[in-house]
Image 1: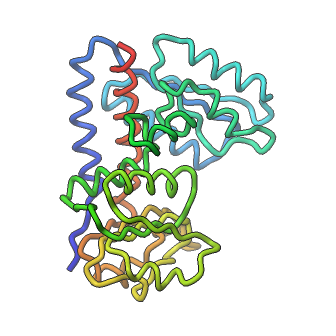
Image 2 (image 1 turned 180 degrees about the horizontal axis):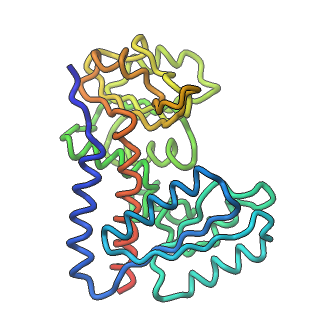
Length: 278
């Protein structure tokens, strides 16, 4: 039987630690969230971030822009927040409307306030192993592995998915811990064969139950980053949990695994930004 990696419990522990830390700080950390348009899923995410800030004692300011907001207006708002001394972290909630360039917007955020870890300076620092803001989901995955004492040195780690938000930064995080890393994606041939050799298998591709039992080596550590909703409305991951769990040594559930860690790490990044600004 696999050990279930309880991300929800670990996230709660991190949030409690942060609450104690914030109470001792001379400056009150503050997060600004920009949302463009009215994407329903984004509204839920923003609400959850607001609740987490509230619980920890982090200030929260929300900026809601119309669907038809111009590029100039969005970039001007980001610049204004860059210059505000009371704002320590800036988060642009994605997706944003198609007429706006999300890359340009991310690049406009001051990298010292880039608590999502998407700015090229933070991405570059991560790739050369310097201290920086790391994208929250990959950082959450690494924290889980660390918490459960999973040693990555010399291990074969396979990441399925190469997104800029999860897959690519995760590769750098794993390399920085001396794992041997293989990345699989939609153009990879023999994914099944490659995955079945992994000591640590991380699925982050957004396809429900993509990783099946025949793709997992006995005793592998399996991390499921996916959150997908079935037609029946049930939340499932990228891993077929029932089929894979008996083969794994450690596995994350969905929900209650990686998801809660993402917000906990975001909060940690805001506190880090506030301490850097002191």
